[in-house]
Image (cartoon, rainbow over all chains, first blue to last red; front, side, top):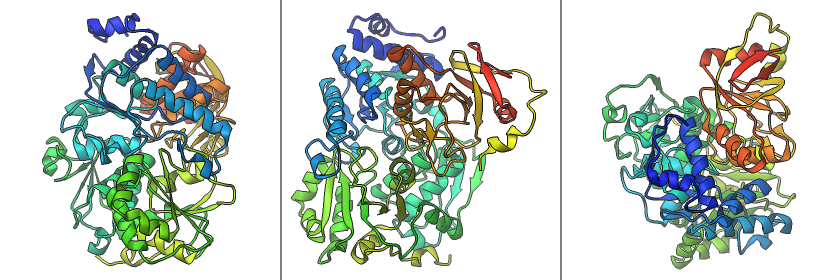
Length: 426
Length: 151
């Protein structure tokens, strides 16, 4: 740590003046600043914590070491999903031996002063950081949203480090915090996407999946689509890119605050690489998101909401399911945050969804709590993130389709997909 | 298809030590498991068994525990660090990591493990050219200065 300049108050935390928990956090942070090549730390104004996910005794031990050592957050801090739906876990197959330590881990983060938001999409209901604001966010899908849609500045903070930033109020001055590291690197030219596909909401998770695989850790600049994505589209796009690639920032020209035009997106440097996906490549990417399930195969579960379902997505789903009923053999699960569930209830959207036979889980998701019974083997989703992680994390088959495909399939009891948009000519 | 089985047949003779940057210094020795494909530990590595479980990854089904794992980088998920910390606690983690350029996620898990469990796998960043040479190495020793010595 020879090259890092620490301020007196950083050194005081490092010496244990604010207690053992904060000392541990500052020692990890200073060490990581060195690894990241930072010369100094900078002040942050907010944090979002992914470390709340229970992954076994080690993550609980880490949380309790900090909390019992007196660590308390120094900036407003929201919490990502947890390892268990705190009040609803008994409705599913979660065992007591998982729920108990997962709950203890939730309590440790609450004891540190974090807001019990328990969502991977805090921007849906919580105060949003402004353009240029320095924050420390965890959760890959939230990070890419904060940088690309809100214009805030966060590095890709992994579990265990986000909380160290929150309890010290500091972050390494490196990576995506710094203007020079935010220039676009790869141009993704979308002028070859047919109009009908451009108007299909399922384009965004598929495009994100395709792009993430190709850019890996570089910064893509997307331009030229004959449609304007909304926030739910950008949420799905970023989450997919951050699953198949290590993308923490994309520029959507004219939507990303620091990318009003192409030249600004590349900070005047121009692209090092150009990509131009056409309909055939995107259709192949859509099919690649599935694993072990084909059209017309039977289904056990339709699952929606990764990242967590938004209020506008609930509105859209309520319209699609109105007056319909799911097939008795297919459960329909929507994962969302507590706050959005309350808003959706108030708006009346949940009435139609419950009549359809839909169920809700909050605080967590199917990837982060062992809630699915063994009898559920075949899943369908409109989320690229769910589709990407289901084979490895859940060892189950999965099909990918649009929201409308998912609803139609839930009614039919088998995988049903409308290929119209994917076979359209330019 | 695992690249290792192909490159195993090629002799590692002629390749001298590689000089890396030790993000987390330490000594280790073991068989090298190499892939040019990034890996997320969340959904990609089973902390209970040390098996690589990402079905889209070339190393799926291989055991990473005790090996020198050479991957260019980790993929997207923020939870990679938590899975690796749990694997280190259980003794199912790789013996060392070699990456193409610095990977902060692997370094973080190793740094936290050193604090919690007083043990951590070395994490060494290599240049692109040197990282590619690792494909030819069957077994290696990592020293605390970040040198990779084929054996």
